[in-house]
Length: 313
Ligand code: TXA
Ligand code: MG
Image 1 (cartoon, rainbow, N blue to C red):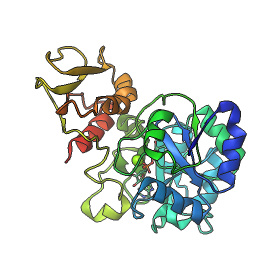
Image 2: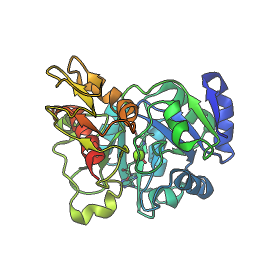
Image 3: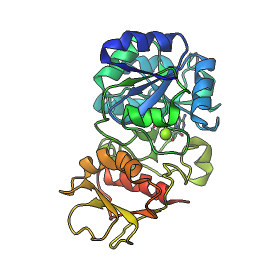
Image 4: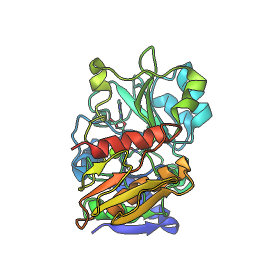
């Protein structure tokens, strides 16, 4: 049985993590399943709990920006991004520092490391009390939709992890943006909680990983974030037994059930609602989930990325 802890029980969560156990915790993006990033056993346990392939590396979470210097090689672009966006929903893939104490399993055998400082008060306090870097992928079974509440975490990982720290729903609702800074051109490995426009203003155009870069972006599997029902994109009409994810005005009528990502067409509100609503509509009485078009701007790019993967069968 996985125990549910709340903010006043933070010390218990920290003690479990220091003892090598797995604890799911909230961040501003999604809930992560955390383990001691310096322990091979804990990192191996994360892969097992998620059913995650070992070639897909993990993001390591820190409580302070300056901790990154001990773990990875920081160039001027990295320094700029860290100063501007940390704490926040941005993960940076960097070369591991020579005596980096992070388990090689967390890097999936690559010579790189993904780092981030989350913008969530309870997560930061947890990281401080543990006093070690924490590896934390999203707290879902591999290939499924990321969790934005403690209930989502328990629905997939109950019995597989020691505890979940419950602090309500996540503010951003989409995973962090992942940027690879190990080459000449910064690469966008995953659009996410920081809009790419904002990043490009600071460090110039971001490249897309090519086929040769495949080992650099092992997490970018086409089928991912998969609900059980088929997902149909850019819907302008619905079938009678389809559920509808609506956005903005002009929603088609006749859906079996409708969830509004945002009635006013607010893209940040839509991002925060996306995963919870995909889960809520993923019920066997419907034949599929139809999704209205979402503009490819700001967080819309990350929303559409997740929806395309959800629609890949
Ligand atoms: O918002 C988030 O990033 C959440 C919260 C919990 O922090 N975490 C998260 O982790 O989404 P995960 O494991 O579900 O996604 C991590 C992504 C994967 O696509 C993985 O392939 C990529 O980051 N990644 C991690 N380390 C990498 C590395 N060294 N090189 C390339 N990609 C890496
Ligand atoms: Mg994930």
